[in-house]
Image (cartoon, rainbow, N blue to C red; front, side):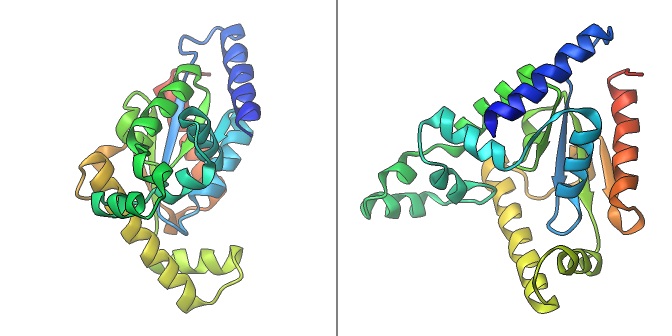
Length: 218
């Protein structure tokens, strides 16, 4: 999956060079809350632009860079792991997790992706590390997010709400622990979309317009 996404970035980069665009390595980051439609929008956007998409693929690339199993990266992915928990893992013999520095490897991996550009990165606080990117935030009301969850997952309203609230709490802790930010606000982004009033296709078109303006493309 990593090789395929890198190939997509390289092809898009070469096309932009051939078309004479002044910027050859643009990146779009999409921060989202669970159920807001961020993953769907990111996929549609990647298809429309011919860009690589880094979601699960980012976990695999971090694992390759750090030379550890992807399951270790998953334990840290968008979650805050305390120093005490790391110590306990080491005491219990989980030395790979105890010694793994998620922040360091995340930063190196994002820098690698950004150097090629023509990429869309979903979540992982990428907006805090890639300031030159077009940084987008997607959110929606709890009611809309629950409806979306029921549409795309085999669940019930109570379970969907519990899953959303758990995800929100984990991501807040992750942002605070990893980037020192108490909360996410619009000043961290170039474009914020409240998805109660937009469909996924609407959001894609809005982001594409912002992309053209930001990177001076035709």
